[in-house]
Amino acid sequence: MYQKKTTNAPTSINEDVKKVFQQAYTNSLRTIISSPIYNIFGESDQCKVAKCCVDNEIVRKKFEDLMLEVFNGSSGASTSERETIFRKLHEKRLSSAVIEDLIRTINNETTKHSEEAVNNFIQDFVLELVGEIFKSFVELGAQSSKNTSEVISENDSKVLFYISGYLISTLLKRYSKVKNPTEREHKKDVMKSLVNKSSEKTFTEKYSTMIDYKNCGGLKKPSDNFFFMIREFENVVRKSVDHESIHSKSFLKDELREEILDSFMVKHNSCDLFELVEDDNERESFLEDCINLFLSVRGFAITKLINKKTEKSAKNEKKTSASLRDALKSLNTGNLK
Image 1 (cartoon, rainbow, N blue to C red):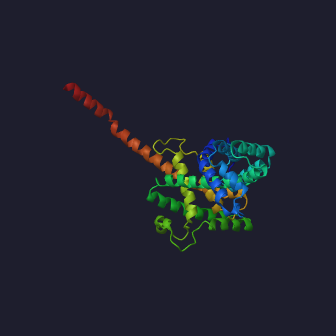
Image 2 (cartoon, rainbow, N blue to C red; image 1 turned 180 degrees about the vertical axis):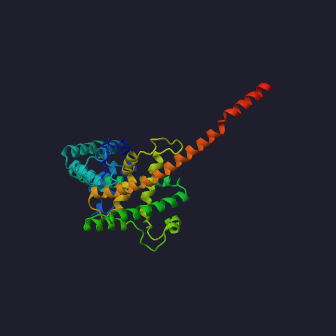
Image 3 (spheres, helix red, strand yellow; image 1 turned 60 degrees about the vertical axis):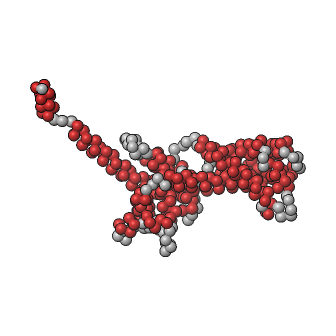
């Protein structure tokens, strides 16, 4: 399996937490204030504390700093990242120093409540808060992906749909050569789960014309979610490769693979797509196989583009470079005038 380079924790994650925190904070407080779960026997102590925290900027900032520590380096897109986040959160909830500091801040900045009431509020609130941030991250990633995908033309989407089916078919053939029968069937089952088995037509049906035209029996029609993930691969490539300024280092496969692996929506989609795979390392191995094959196909397209530009440049150069005889003729003609 490809070994990812060790990189510093992406600062963009902290920026994303800051971007979504205000709404997540408001929604979490609203849940504790209005949800029957927290107010079964009338207004609960948690509800009373929550109401006092609604408009307090100092309390809000305290919880924001806590979430920045919990989410530092992890976006929560993959199962392993979510486990890391909840492990950090659990440590914070058990830390007497952290809880005492939060209780002191809330009681100093709002109406004073019993330590037990504030502690109960904190324990419930931080769980709600993490859940809201996860939800906001998915919405943010989906919107960003949608905005980028709108630039992809319908014809390009048809090609991507075809490539998605090609990836499944090619990997099925590759996995059918695995010697261990148990491993072979498992890998094939995982790839088969990416095939569209539904007879219902979805909006991706309009992209299937290329598959229908070229299919001689071996191509697989991808599920909508697999197509969305492959489209996200393309989004990452388009962000990273400047097609107007192609050069020898425009398409470095290792770097592009790493950028695709780091994409929030790729991680998020792969968790749903490879649900038959319980082990995170194995799931990433399947994902890397898809990425490597996609980049190979995409690399051919970049090479073709470079060749076309080179040919066009050579033709233009040939047209602008007159022969020596023509140059001398025009020079002599000019001197005679």
